[in-house]
Image 1 (cartoon, helix red, strand yellow):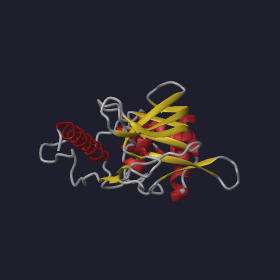
Image 2 (cartoon, rainbow, N blue to C red):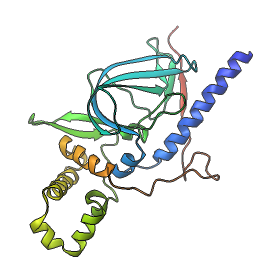
Image 3 (spheres, rainbow, N blue to C red):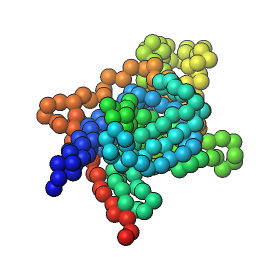
Image 4 (tube, rainbow, N blue to C red):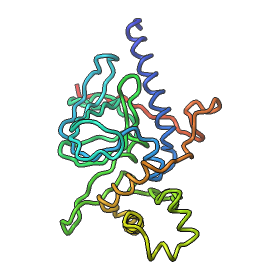
Length: 254
C-alpha cells in the first residue's frame, strides 16, 4: 500500500471521527427537541434546493456532496440569498461513493428548513442530529400553506419543553404568579406565542404550520439553553451513550 493511499485513508478517518463528534453532540442516539436543535445550530434557514452534486473536495480529496440553496428566510445566523452546504459523502452517477448513515440528501426544487452545524476546518457541515435537522415543507391538503416535518415525523420535537423556554424567563415567571390575569391581559407577542405553541403541539406528527414553526424557532434563538452536553474525556464522541457513525463505501456497476 503506497504512502499516498495511506495519507488519504488517514484523512478519511479524521473526517469520520469529526462527524462522529458532531453527531454525538447532536444526540442522534435519541430524538432532539426543538430547543436543543436550535441551540446547537450555527445557522437555521428556510430555503429551496437549486442544485446538488457529488464531487471531490479540492483541499482534502474527499468525496463530498455540495448543495446550493436559495435562502428565503434566515431564522438564525445571517448570510446572502444563497448558501452552499458541503457534506461529507455522496453517490456518484455510476453508483460508487460514500454513504454516511443518517446523512440527509436533497432534491432540486425541494423546500426545507435546515438546522446546520457551524462548518468545521474543512468547510464541511451537516444538519443537527443528521436527518432530524432537515425539515421538509409539506403542502397542506387544502392548499392554504405548508406544514413542517423531519425524517422522524417530528417525534420528540416538543418533548420536555416548558413555558419558560417558549415564552422567556420573565414572561414564564409572571405566568406562574398571575396566570389568569396574564391570560386575560396578555401582550400581543405572548398571545401569538401561546397560540402558536398550542397549534404546533396539537398538530402532532402531522407537522406544525410553517409560520407557527418559524415563530417558535425565532423565540428559542433568544432563549438560553443550558442542557447541551459537552465533550468529556471518558466519552471520545463527546456525549454519553453515543453510537459510532456508520460510513459505508459503495461500488458502481462495472
